[in-house]
Image 1 (cartoon, rainbow, N blue to C red):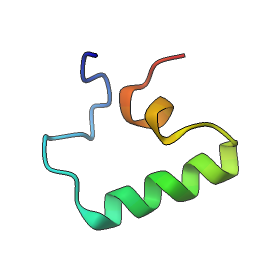
Image 2 (tube, rainbow, N blue to C red):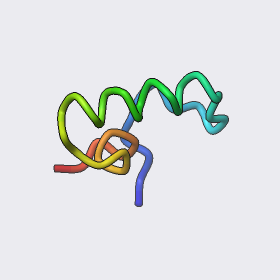
Image 3 (cartoon, one colour):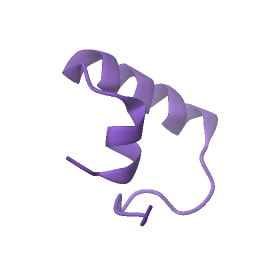
Length: 39
């Protein structure tokens, strides 16, 4: 899969992962969707 998320620099900080999980919960989507920007 291509890296589509412009904030993803190759190193995932724990804080970033937590933020993604929070966003995923709010939007009710998978964390993968946020990470890759697909769909």
